[in-house]
Length: 235
Image (tube, rainbow, N blue to C red; front, side):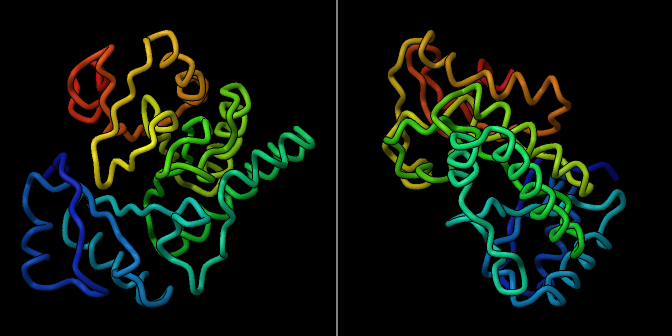
């Protein structure tokens, strides 16, 4: 049986019978975990082991563990800083900033791999324009060159720990105020301005990026459909 295209979530800290059946569905390929699925590292490791045992090849298990306000597992894990801290360190001392990015990428990934988690959806490479409610201190920097350099360092740290990186939110969530979890943000910039958000993705792809998360943001100057549903952006 191959893995399907759908990622699903779970209700609690242990698999329920109907969830086991759902995870066997051929359209399912992965599971995303949230804080409600976490009690302690031991429980988490058991849950991930059970998920992996359901199918062959094993379902992928993922989480958002960026740090700052987006860290699903806290007690028993290192409290990671928001990515903006890395950017501030970079602005003060470039070498120290890139080293910190690599170290934090490794630490985050190593702790998750220790309990069997396959993927963490990090790093966020949206530019810090200072307007997005959803992004804010999750952004590394306002400068695309700095974001690209730091994101590659973070990705390499994750890779050293045995985890692939995910760049998000393509093509960019930093220039809109609305939070795409509760509304559809509309970025009305011209293509030339939107294109300024893309260099971090190009740099990461050139260094072996494995995964991209597409933003649920509309860019009407390019396509009327939100990027997450747009063949233009996805292709």
